[in-house]
Length: 558
Image 1 (cartoon, rainbow, N blue to C red):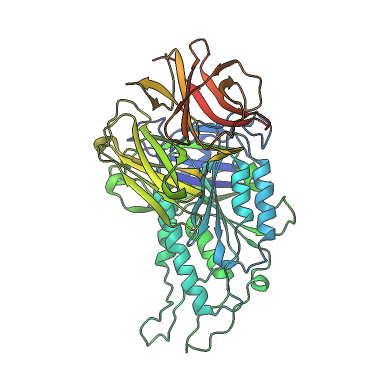
Image 2: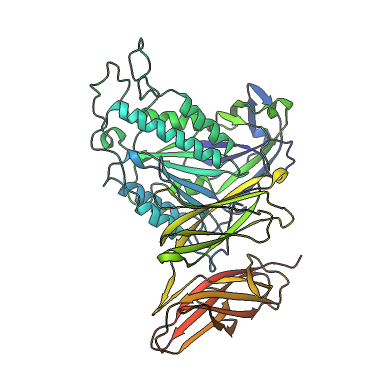
């Protein structure tokens, strides 16, 4: 039996900050986890020095719900706090390494991977080098699947070795930058890195000449390795089974020195600097990445004896051995033990409403997870599908509670990136998908539903409710009912299509010639803590009712 050990390094919130920890998984040769190791089975060396293991804990992913099951209620907001009982997985595609029309194998593989994940597992989709984060961490498999399916390869018909080297350098720079931004997690993140081929380190000119434009040194690779260790990123480098046959490189006749044109060299180099597993797409259909879900279903956390030198911020060399016959050990060769700045927990959501001249106004709500923390700076940026900033906002008074800002964009889909700073309490960021569009209800256009409380005669948005006896619901709509009877009310239910627990009518007031606002209260005092769907149901005589929904989260009173 062959045993494989994969190692991550970092700090766990469950142990004192002065105690460095390591996260690692142990599997058989088919990826099945092994959960019977003790601290005596593992030897860790850092910069050649053996470090005693204080304690060893096993962490299992909660897979009690059916694989691929969707939550009954959408999350009421996005947060930068990753779930403690599910996996965090990044699907990163090297978009420019695939020729258009050659994407189906990796699409099928990702489809199988998504179907095998548990309901609490969070997935992010990233297109590199230029696409950026297409889908932030989410449990919505459909959003990820649609983004992957719409991703088209950008590799040209003919590519020289020098051009491959230039492309690879850009890819590595963006990959390192992404991992450095991801460096807030204290639990492992699996990165499924899909590429059609990469150049290895190479010169782009004769040895006696100055470096050429597409010089590719080992440093961009090493930077990715350092960033992967700091971000707890467990790499799976996925590539076509026959890379050389899939990605043919045209001989470079413009340079007197071409270096190696083998697109496998970069793949092997990336796997080496990250300590990652190379996974050829030998299997067809949707089973190619099945091993990823098996291997990541559990892992160990080892507390190691601290050393004062750990805190100097240098990248250190790591070596790991397992005292078990036939064991194979895979680990990150580089690790940084310097203490991180505190991560500021954030919550954020967005509401679409009518903007000027046919545009959509996005109201964003940002708040720290800890209500006692006061923000000193906060920003919000909307990025379009091409990764371009479409609108930006910076809080004039970031200490305001709740903190809201408005951004105006054309109708479409966007990624909202919010970032905030709270001085000694750290900084943080969160991302969420935003649809800048109103809901059609016959001749009416309906804005998003806002849930909140009454303050000074207006509805102030609220992300969580505790001891409040009622929650207020408010939404704007525009147009003319054209003489038909209009009914509009609120319902609260346990799931999207569940029968209502309570229902109440909304009161409509005119704001302008064709602008209206509907507001009402729904009793929540008797409801136990949990997530509920609040539905605004708009009925217009002669037309099917239209629903606008928002999740209400009730927490135990503090």
